[in-house]
Image 1 (cartoon, rainbow, N blue to C red):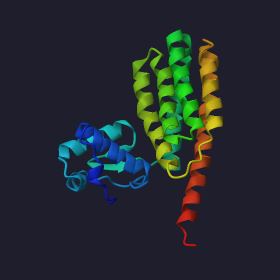
Image 2 (tube, rainbow, N blue to C red):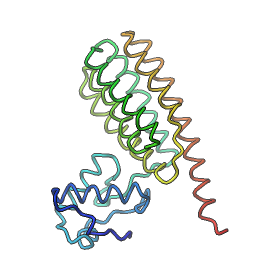
Image 3 (cartoon, rainbow, N blue to C red):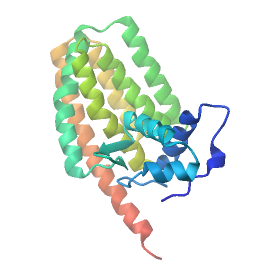
Length: 235
């Protein structure tokens, strides 16, 4: 279990928020690894905080997709290649249709929101800020989901895609290998086809993009796994 420094808690902020930030940072810094159990009682003892505070912090991290709860056990998000493929199958059905509907309901306000996300993504890319880039990436997709009329569809997309993007952030946290330019081009294409108002075309193009996202992620994660194993070998 990683040693968390209680002194890093900022008492000027609500303790639940600071506990959440501290645990999230431990995950993103690789101190809590994908698939590792995150024990509530031990964390409460270590940080000298109530179990209620730790539970609320872990619940917030579940909402962000960084923690997965199975029964009473919470672990850092981890997806096998097979699980990733299963989730991409669901995403490949839902998100193209969401873009189909969004194209027919696209507004100037929606377009401004999406452009603001891409501007923030470009800034993060220029600064090589991978964490901020992935965060804004999710917000960009959420803008599209929000501006289609089916709220059940939006909810299920969040359930499927938030853990995928959170795992992407965790997986790449140690080795910054994200191809920012490629990702920006793909998101620009997604926005351009949605704003045409042609739902059928938007659905077709986005389905192809998601298939491409899947292939890229599988290739990248396998390469990262190989690099991790090589780095762990004694010289």
